[in-house]
Image 1 (spheres, rainbow, N blue to C red):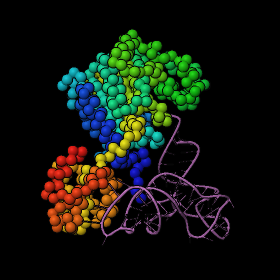
Image 2 (spheres, rainbow, N blue to C red; image 1 turned 45 degrees about the vertical axis):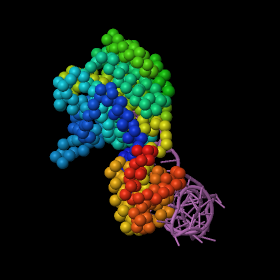
Image 3 (tube, rainbow, N blue to C red; image 1 turned 120 degrees about the vertical axis):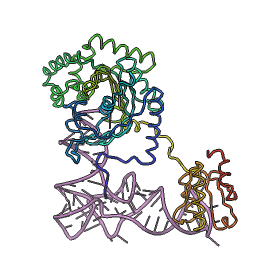
Image 4 (cartoon, chains in turn green, yellow; image 1 turned 30 degrees about the horizontal axis):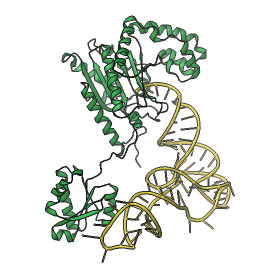
Length: 418
RNA sequence: GUGAGUGUAGCUCAGUUGGUUAGAGCACUGGAUUGUGGCUCCAGUGGCCGAGGGUUCGAAUCCCUUCACUCACCCCA
């Protein structure tokens, strides 16, 4: 048996309805905030991700799907969307068009990690990017939108955490100071953190090891070392959030794994997903567009992990669409009539199913019941000879004979269908 | 990359210290009702017990190898 590749999953009917619901809500809400959808390629040149995400990150070092194409050029399945959106923004000079550009996109991302709960090799994200403003109001606006979206899809048991990573100017000196502190404590740290001190010292803050957490509690905090400008910026973001009624919590340990983040950073976390507690995360990346060869334009964005988000949506009734009409037929002439009638219903927008394979009426009725059809139309030889069909209301268990020529009209009259 | 757990019917799972023909519920098909669903009853279809090797008179059960899945570390959405 050929099976799906490890970490790649089918999203089956029954589950897919939740996806449609979430994606439709996202589109609707995001568009009220002035965002436009952008569709970007699934593959890009490897350099795009290496330069934006950071050469030394795990994503770039060991998680990307990179293949030579037929001409031997290295192409990479996108591990995230921000780099591609930034590339498109620069390539099409979208900054010439309007001062602030706001995008969202929805689609699959690929990372070669070991799969586990809430983590897959192909996973899906909703991405939001706002380019062209450094106004802290836009940071708050973005978090408001995210928060509103989560409320609308009834994901409430989550927490919005925020932090500031400072700008490039204040982060470099802080980083040096932090490394100095951590190197002295090196002996107490776990092996992973000893490595992190060298590669990405900020990440020692979100180590799960108790001893490491105690050490980092005493370590210098970024928030105490950001410059006056960054500090004012962060205060403004918070003031906006408070005024807008968005609840949040400052988490000084909140750091991001991607190199391009600056200033405001935020994460929506849950305790329901085991090791993967981040449902959505993002922040400001003021240097990214310039780093990728564009003008010096600030930006910010976030990504929502759809698999994670959808697993948090309370299980409601079956969202799948049951047919309005099920047509059961007996005999080959009746079957043809059933096919023609099904078209008539469908062409006026009535969801219609028919019985297949010449099964017994009992079997067809059972199937209609399984599908939760509202009405069953029964066409047999006797009725056909008289030019009539039976219309049965499944819930009421009542049925009547109706002229074949009038059946579509008759069904249309029943309000509950349309 | 590291560690742990689990693999028996389409699905969810039983299966005793190794013992005859491997079970149940759900689902599916047929019947009770010659052309009428849900509830009930009866019957039926459906298994290389993940794969390969070993121990044994005898293996779903014990041992080894391997594969798959799941969870955790790591990383991240």
